[in-house]
Length: 394
Image (tube, rainbow, N blue to C red):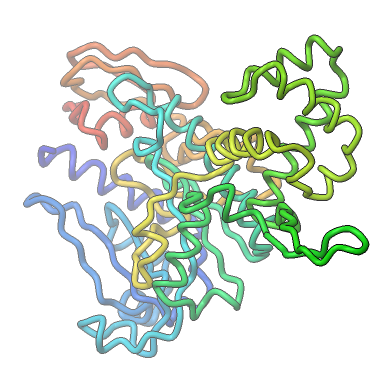
């Protein structure tokens, strides 16, 4: 990035901060703060500051308007002395549980082929799956959802029960969200029961643990499958069953009868209604894990000292706002419209486009060819921060 572009962006970031009212996170005085400058020598991170170090006798808005940083961060961790020069001296008290979803790291996303808009749309779907897990499986209540301003979303969990979790405990949560180590045997509880009257020989009773977690999710899928079979003719149901691996016509015939006669037992978790039911459950579990896990960035969640972007700040790699999203507004949230800063709306600027590119922002698509062009400022800022353009002389 050349000097003119850097100077222009730094000035306009400062203008944005002067007209913004940015709220610090809870326990701001217990957190480490950091920021990246518009240094000409590359990325320069300034960190190991307390909130007081930054604001002095003023407030966060004054600091941001004066320093005009490229990126702004605060720590998930809370400390006795957040401004200490090393992590060992800070005195850790606890940490928010933070989840990060990056669009270009998602399975099935190709950053070379997929547009920025397509990647962000896919990332939002992953976010909804993550929130479903956090709210229903963990019963977390204090959740803050944030558009990162760049490639995806962050979720901050601040329930009191998570703050003192160790790295290893956070790793277990990561494994759950990713569906690591989940297989059908782990979800089946085996119990020894007595045989019929007059017999002493115990037998195994296998029951799907369906009172919560992945067992409950599998049971829901199994119930939907059984209900689907009930609505089919015998021929259609047989075709549906024989589509599963290792289930032929004979097995499908006996199984269909057993399923229709013992639907209540299946919905109660009885996996022994028919010996092929486990085969179906295994297949359905694969589908559940594929469709309901969330591909989070693992190191972010396990790192109790992680620095994370400040909501309300600007992302220096896009010019978009790092934006807190109220939970009831998430469905309608469009980052390429809602995260465009008002500061950059209503003005046109001239930029030199270095390489042909397409920018979709503000509900419009802009095809930019190489050369000097006048365009809406928010489009020009996006192109410059992403390295596609430089500021042209006015």
